[in-house]
Image (tube, rainbow, N blue to C red):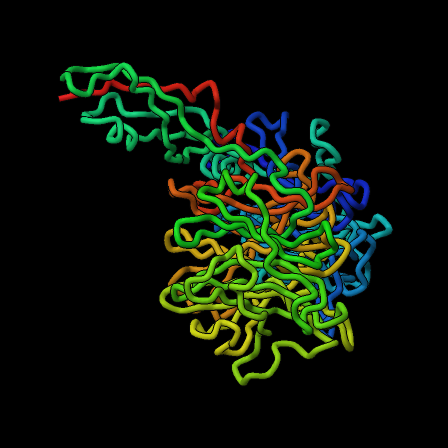
Length: 605
């Protein structure tokens, strides 16, 4: 297999980056493995917006807190079965030596350079810090050769039959100091090159298609159609083709003015492919946004940063587009109820068993009493009328006790997942006392008749163990579900709520047991960051809504400048070659305006 790969000229560069300013590209982000692609082995193109794809996990302490970790000097190599391995040096988050990793080297396995399993630390049986590392499979001897240098520049050699057996490396032998071939990557900002690995054309194409933003390269419409009216013609749609081979169906605004529908014949008709555009931002000082459809209308609700989270307003319109300019109606404030005193966070609209609810967080007083609450719209009520909403009710566990211990643990960002006849809640929870654990995301079954009550014990979904999730602070929050085909995607927001905010991804099969942590896979790198879309910093806290054409829209907040306020944005969700959501496809790439004019022969009989 190695021989076959070497016949093809496809190259992947493994590298890290130099850290930038802490708010732009901190050490916890820069000290991760990045990938670049080349067809000639000389000119490399950064993948994934020049952001990391492989991060080290934090380690756990007995009290539940975590120690953030980073990695340096990653080295990409082939496993005996032709798949991929990575060895790297685990460090403290700022890149300094990690005492827990002394005399060891990290080992990861990957089938495709997109998904990675952190196997663990290979014990090199040495009482020194590893300063550089390389690994190659010796096919003749059928073992792996680990070459490494210590902090004093001394070179060593170890062999290991099976790197998955972390304790089976031989005792080190002195050897020549490890050196690497020089790899030029001057065109990649901040790159610290490591090594190059040849890959098959299939692997290369898959990497490029998954780790670059697709571009609309063609618009296809059928050559001719039989139609008896303008309404029939309106149903004829176009197919947008993208650079990664994916497609999307789009509506066409046909100009049928020259068609005489009473006279049989063939008419040449032109049209313009429709693509809704939402210039960012669509709402200033609105964060954690949610758009939902109810009884034929669309509603928008969000955290109100303009008054420091003291009110909740809602908008109503006949379309998502009209929500942008719709008037706001106050539906909750901090004066109406004794137990609602502030920090009205992350409201979400959900329809459960035909009833409309708002899930939101609020405090009875101070920050440390922030808890999830639920409001219900009365039968026949109007969502934009405050009096038609019930008093916010606090979410409780299955035994009726409070979800969190007041004053010690807060809960927020509760969302609803409805799948296979079951109803689930997912939310973020943060313990502050006796120690700050950071924000973790949990899931539990929910009573659809009383959706403020859990019917199962909470199960941990994700905690901020990767460097992109504990950058500045340890936070996983803002979960929201997106179901497509046989996959359930849950996006969540991580890190500090500033320009370093990012979007992570959890995936499960729709027929899986959602209360079993094994059912879930967490992507090693974030789906959306400040580097994903120009001049949109700290994107996060997504929600999703489907419009009347079947298009799915990502509603999120970001900042138009590093220090600017949080603002709402709307962008169409695309799906990549594997059916995974693409959240960074801008309007310009979604529809090439030069291709938007199309024509068709209309046959009137």
